[in-house]
Image (cartoon, rainbow, N blue to C red; front, top):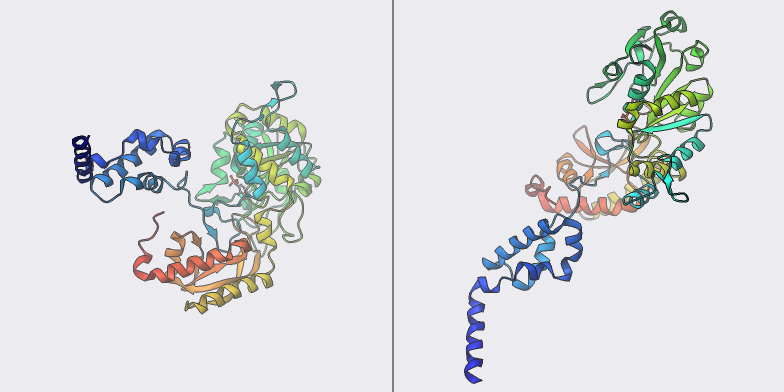
Amino acid sequence: MRRGGASTLRDLSLTWKDPRRRVPRTDTVLADPALTAALERHGRDVVRSAVRRAQDRVRDGSLEPGAVPRAVLADLPRHATSLRPVLNCTGAVLHTNLGRAPLSAAAVEAITAAAGSTDVEMDLATGRRARRGRATMAALQAAVPAAEDVHVVNNGAAALVLAATALAAGREIVVSRGELVEIGDGFRLTDLLESTGARLREVGTTNRTHRRDYLDAIGPQTGFVLKVHPSNFVVQGFTSGVEPAELTGLGVPVVVDTGSGLLAPDPLLPDEPDAGSVLRSGADLVTSSGDKLLGGPQAGLLLGRADLVERLRRHPLARALRVDKLTLAALEATLTTAENPTWVALRADPEELRRRVGLLAAALTDQGVETGVVSTGAVVGGGGAPGVELPSVALDLPEGLARPLREDGIVGRVEKGRLLLDLRCVPAARDGEVRDRVLAVVRRGPAASTTSGND
Ligand SMILES: *Cc1c(COP(=O)(O)O)cnc(C)c1O
C-alpha cells in the first residue's frame, strides 16, 4: 500500500512537470458541456482546430489545462459572418455602401422565422404545392390597390431586365435621353436594358423631351415606352419632360421605373413618385427597389396590369431572378408593419436630434474630448429624392478619429477637415454606444488608432 502510494505521488509530480502529460485529450475537451453550443454553431472541424491551438498553448506553458474550454471559445470566430454591423452616422439615410435600408425588428424576426424549413411553396391544409410567396404578394397588392397584379424579383435592376426581356427583346424600348441614368458603381441603365436584346430608341434631348418625340418614335417595333425617374440627380433650368399620363392610349405599354419603392404619396417627399399614383395616372407597369424608400430587403417590385405581370411571371428568366424565402419573409413584414428604421430616420425631428447630440457632446466634453454640436444637412441617399436636404444635427469631432471610429463600427462623414457624426439614422437607444466608442477611441490615443480593426 505504502509503496503504491509513493509511486502514485511520484507519477503525479512527473505529470506535473511534463507539459505533454497535462494536455487534456481532444475528445475530453470536445465533450465539455461548455462547448456544446459552439460545436453546433461552428461544426466539429472548426472547434477541433481551436482545441489544437489551445493544447499547443498548454504545451508551451502559456495556458492552464483547466482554462482550455474557455480559450477555445475565445478563439472561435465571434460572428458567423465577417460582415460587420455598423452605426450609420453619415447622415445618408439609405447609404448604398452600408447596405441601404436597415430592416425593421419585425423584418429581422420574419427572416429568423423563415430561415428553417417553411411553407413557402406548400399549402399546409392540403399538403399540395402552393404559389410561392403568396402572402407577400397579397401584402404588396394590399399596399398598392391600383396594381392589378404584382411580382417580386431580386432587385430593381432585375425588375427592369425582366420587363425588357419579356416585353421588348428583339424590339425597341422608347426612352427619353434625359432619363438614361447611371445607377451607381458604373452601372448604366442603357447597358442593362440593351443586354436583354432590346434596342433603345432614344428620344428628345438631355434637358427636354416632348410628347411628340415619343409619338414620332412609337411604331410596330415598339415593345414599350419607358419612363425612368432620375433618382440620383436633378436637371434644372430649361427643362421639359412628359408625364406617364400623357403617353397612355398610344397602343403600347408604358413602363415606369420609379426607383425608390415609395408605394403611396408622402408629404415629406412631395417630388418623389409613388407606385400607386403612377399606376392611377395610367402607367401599365411600375418597377422599383425594395430596399430604398420602402425600407425593406433588397428586392425588385413589379406592379401593374394583370396580363403584363403574368407575362413576366411566366417568362423563363423569372426563375433566375426569383427571390428566396428570407426576402419574401422580410418584405411581407415590412409591408405589414407601420414603421421601419428608414422612416424613423426620415421623420426624425431636428430639435430632438439637437437635444440628443447636445447630451452626447456634454458627456464627452466632461471627459475632456474636444467636441461640439453642429447643424448639418442629411440626405435620403441610395438614389432617392435627389436635391432634398433634411435639416439635421451632428457631433463635431477631429477628423483623425474618423478611421479608428469607422473600424470600431461608427461610420461618420468627413466634411471640411472635421468628422461629423449625424444622429439622424442612429436609433436613440444607441446614443450611449456612440459616446462609449468615441471615448474608447480617444483614450486609446493616436498610436493605437491605425492598428485597431481586429474583432
Ligand atoms: C435604384 C434604382 C435602380 C436599381 O435598383 P436596384 O434595386 O439597385 O437594382 C433602377 N432605377 C432607378 C431609377 C433606381 O433609382
